[in-house]
Structure formats: structure tokens, C-alpha cells
Length: 305
Image 1: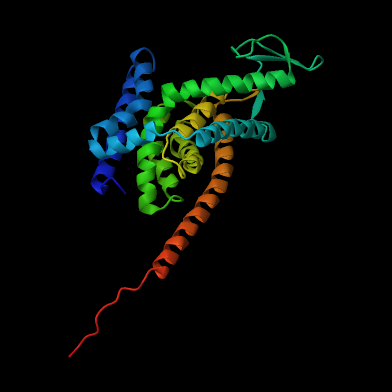
Image 2 (image 1 turned 30 degrees about the vertical axis):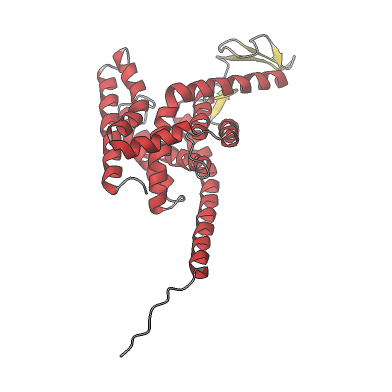
């Protein structure tokens, strides 16, 4: 663990305090005008906290931002698309969604889709199902990458680039995502308690749905972060998921259904990722034990009278 316990706790306290301040400010301005800018600033609060909390935090964050792995970046992109596909499946199988008629017109007779509520990369002319699928996937990829640069990378640079790695070194790669998810959930309590996302059930969202979603996301992101130090794979995965959720074929009937669908998807995926992380952690522990057993014994002189 590169950060001291004091530095680690101070960094978390700074992130939570600044996040509360920007969200309460956004609420004061009724989430419009300056309020929207403060809401946007909440996503960049973690970076500001890292910059304010000493050279070690800044060095770790800079290392995560300047490192790039093409393989893991592509896996991050694929992970974001797979999460979107899984969410669409849950919306359909659990009967939580409906056709996105505000953005697409589905002509079942001609087997065509006419996009009219969104701007797609390959055009909005009537198109067959295959071309439409390719079109919307390419659009989600580009939109997700832009979302990563504008909204997500600052958030991930601290949470996954610094805090997750430090916590994983302290308690293990399989336990750290739980605490990271809970801490992120705490950071956004003011936003959800004030009913910004789900006005019908603000407390259920703030204290149940959102923490569960954050823990699930943390496990998915941990799977992408465990073998590389770059923050870009997790930022792109999260950016694609955020950009695509609510803009595909099926949309949730309401905010509650959207939260329920995300919770189902991320719970299922996180259980799989958690089992893989536990296996990886146990293998690493076994290798360390073997290396200690194979090491030459320390020879101590016999006690002589």
C-alpha cells in the first residue's frame, strides 16, 4: 500500500466532503444553471481530492492516466457493450421495459427501423435490423468514448486508479470492491435523497438500490483493473454503459424499473467476477506460500555454553 492509512482516510474524507458540497449546491440552485455545473463538477471532485492530498496520490493517479493497454482498453469497450446487452435482456425477461418509441419507429412488416429521436453515426434513414444494430453499436462506442473523456475518466482516476488499488493491497482484490462501492454510494447520498433520479423512492434509491449498483459496478471495474494499472479500460467501459443505458431498443418504464434492471444485471455479473477474483487471490496466496517454503531456511548458530 503506497498511501499511508492517514493519507488514505484523508483522501476518502475529502472526496465525500467535496461531493456533498457540490451536490447540495446543485440542489440549492434546483439543478439548473449553476446547479448543473456543480452536478457536473461532482464527477471531477475525486481528481481534485487527489490533487489536494499530497504527492503520493498525485503520482499514483498520474501513472494510471498515462498508462495505456490496447488489449484491456478493447476489453473495457466490450464489457460496456455486454453490460448494455445484459440490461436489455433483463428489461425484456423481467418485463421492466418497453419499446423506445420516442427514438425509434419499428416497422415489423418491412422489418425496418426508422431512427428519429437520436443521431446515429451511419445515418437515420430507415434500415434493416442488422444495419441498425451495427449503426447503434458504433454510435454507442463513439458516444461512450466521449462520455469517458468528459464525465468518467476523472471519477475513475481516483476511485479505480488510486483508492481501489490501495484498498486491494490492504484487504485483497476480492474484498475491496465492496467497500469502494459503499463509499461511492455514500458520496451520492445527497443527490438521491433529494429525489434527483427517483423522486418516488428517494431513500430506497439512496440507501439500497444505488449502493448495490455501485458494488456491482465496482466488481466489474475490478475485473478490468486487476491486471493493469491503466484507468482507461474502466473509464471506457463505464462511459459506454452510461451513454447506452436508456438509449437502446428497450427503455425502463420508470426510474424504479431502471434501477431494478441495473441491480439485477450488476448483481449477476458481480457474483461471477467476485468468484474469479477470489480464485485469483487464493492462487496468489498459494504462490506466495510456496515461495516462502522453497526459500532457504535462515541458519542460526547453535547456542553454546
